[in-house]
Length: 103
Image 1: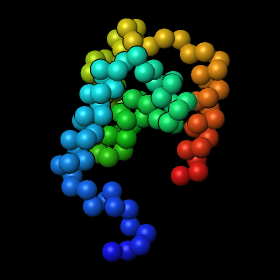
Image 2 (image 1 turned 90 degrees about the horizontal axis):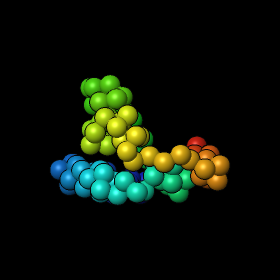
Image 3 (image 1 turned 60 degrees about the vertical axis):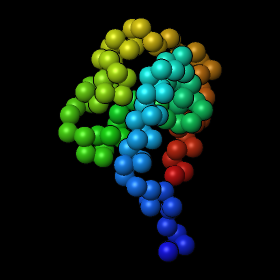
């Protein structure tokens, strides 16, 4: 095995898909975890997941991808689940996104 190989690449696709679906369902359940908070802490959010499935070949548009991840149209999700971001949350998000550039 190549010493630079990522063991994650050896994970069976079915197992990876099951884990991804579990993550998405968990985020749907934990709508109290705001996207802005996820961005501030981890540098990704539900909308990133929607972008990533499109990058992976999902054929539908951005709105359809977000609906798939949110479990409802994004406008409905924003109206019923999203709270306004504070200046502090926005600053944490910007700092966290800057770390993503190091990947």
